[in-house]
Image (cartoon, rainbow, N blue to C red; front, side, top):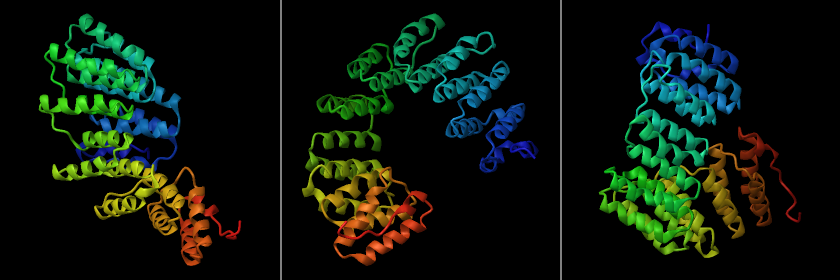
Amino acid sequence: MSAFSHLLRRPFSTVNLNHLYKEKNIVKLVDSFKKNTQNPDFRKKASYYEFIVQQLTRAKAVGLIEETLNDQKKYVETSNEGFAVRLISLYGKSGLFNHAHQLFDEMPELKSERTVKSFNALLGACVSCKEFDKVNGFFRELPKKLGIKPDVVSYNTVIKGFCEMGSLDLAAAMLDEMEKEGVTPDLITFNSLLDGFYKKRRFLEGEKMWGMMEKYNVVPDIISYNMRLLGLVLQDKMQEAVEFVEEIKNVELTPDKFTYNFLFKGFCCNRKYLEQAKSWYSAMVKTNCEPDNATFATLLPYACSNGDFQFAARLSRRLFHRRLRLRDVSMVQRVIDGLMKQSEVNEAMLLLQLGRDSKVSCYRSLRMRNPKN
């Protein structure tokens, strides 16, 4: 039985994706997918398309992605514009920009209308494929050619493209153009600009964007707050950063892993913040906000550099519990060695055993070494 064949025997509204994970052979998976897309109801499920591309991307099977998506072009003529938009977006996410562009150009031949939706999909494919030089050209030329008016999604995509290519002044200038064209910026607009300016350490411009949100009645979300927090951290304004996190709580938003990780990034630039880092780590765990790889990659070296191997051991135990893998596996070995030098033999042996019992194979190379080594 194929990976998809039983889908046709029950209503698509009740189907989930669990059965897809059982097929390990990607060639068979693609073959089953192509056969089942003959069913119009199957083609309505965008999640199936996202899944197949994700699986093939993980397998680095670019050729199969191209083959699979190209096979779907024959259904554009019998579908609405949304189907073409889906394919253009998936081409973009897969790095196949030329295919995305080609499908957009072929839509009239395939009797598919081109509106601002497919135009936005093409712009998005440009950004996904980092074809930044094409973003502004398409934005200036195509609306007149197609007789369409760019909407807030169009502007947001161009702004994101400018930010990613480092042209922040051009990105900010789009706000004036939006106002002139009667397009109101939204939360996505400002989050892109905040991300761009604060990450590039252009704090004053970031603050200007933060202030402009009120002008347009845009309420910041946790992403907005995290971007401004990062700006404060990069300016080494740690006291203000800590106070700002309290402000996040006061506006009834919940700090997430990025909030804490940005704080840790700032704390770890100075040894005097060790106790604060430990306190905020405890707060993170107590609020059921799970630490991730970035958390451990930041705090483990910091704890070791400060000689606090008890804290480092606490971090390592949770790392094993969550079955996460650090890029620098030797950091955990450093914790074990540090515990041995401080005669914390039992703690070191516990970490060693946890590492060897871990399902993450790289930790099984951990070993006990002579403290003098």
